[in-house]
Image (cartoon, rainbow, N blue to C red; front, side, top):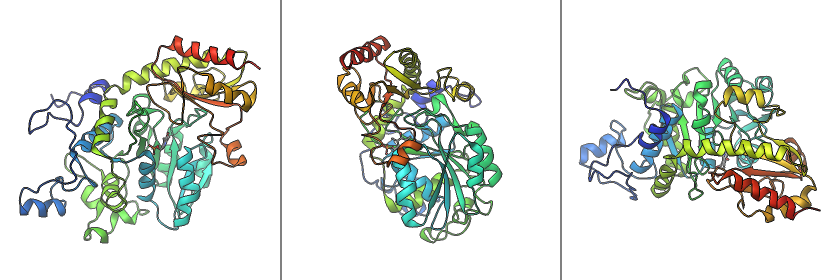
Length: 434
Ligand SMILES: *Cc1c(COP(=O)(O)O)cnc(C)c1O
């Protein structure tokens, strides 16, 4: 029995859960409790020395959250995961876990807006500098690595232009340089792409998007690939005594743990950054994200099919100047996407409307099925004008570098009938004819 490897659809329903031992509830119980009663003095002592895993206080661990963590780790093929209050917290803690003042990160330039401002503006105030490079050119990541570089950071599929990163090539560079590759896999999801199978070491998610999938909860995760040797010399915070934890050495304790393997990255993030900075996920949100996760593969399968149909419809439309979708033959990412994203290249993409910003403004108000809002990955189809909404904080140069032009409209394709989505876009083109 133990040799049998369960498939994705089974794991998204079952991984990490056994029916609740107290009352045998089938659904994952919402343990909406700040704290947990110690069994006895010895157990309290053992839990606090981490000689025993047990629940104490929900900032650093909660049984509902743990099901989500174990399930996402299983779906990604990692050793462990850490749930957090948002995707932004997941990105922040993942970076802080490797870099301190004087260190550097090398990141793709097209990263999510919040990640960009974290790396470009907030972390430099604390001495952590990021060098941004063209994510289409793996060799540029290599050229930007210095003695001080502590990680490479990329997103599998970028937003809004659906640029695909050659994760294998970037992972080879990170490996040769002895630094971890952190991949934000939010837009791909583990259903379309599993970064650890392509050499990544850490995965981060905004669970707010496809994992939850129903636009009701903000959440994030860090997943440990268990495949990075933190004892290579560049990461003393893993290999020397942690004064904030009574001298615990993370790599010694969590580098080869019985039954788990190497989950030092996630444990250090939990014990240091979640403990001290506190962006914990609410158990109720973990429950809602788990309900969404049960149908991840079915939703995403449908969403990528519909996105492909819409991209083809738009590419043939006289009122459309261009379409950025890796599933189109003329996309510069077409061949790469065929190779690394054979199930589909995501369901978030952009197109340029003839008539520029003035018509885009009318178009986002004219749609009837799509919702005009700032989010992606919902079961409902979404539309936005990135230059004035999601990316409004970028200056003109940054907008140009991110490929965000005034006529650009971003779609996040949901699970509605695709014919209704095509109808909706067509009626919006008609309603906004100059
Ligand atoms: C939304 C998003 C984030 C931030 O996640 P929140 O849950 O909104 O904090 C990070 N990365 C990507 C790719 C995202 O789409």
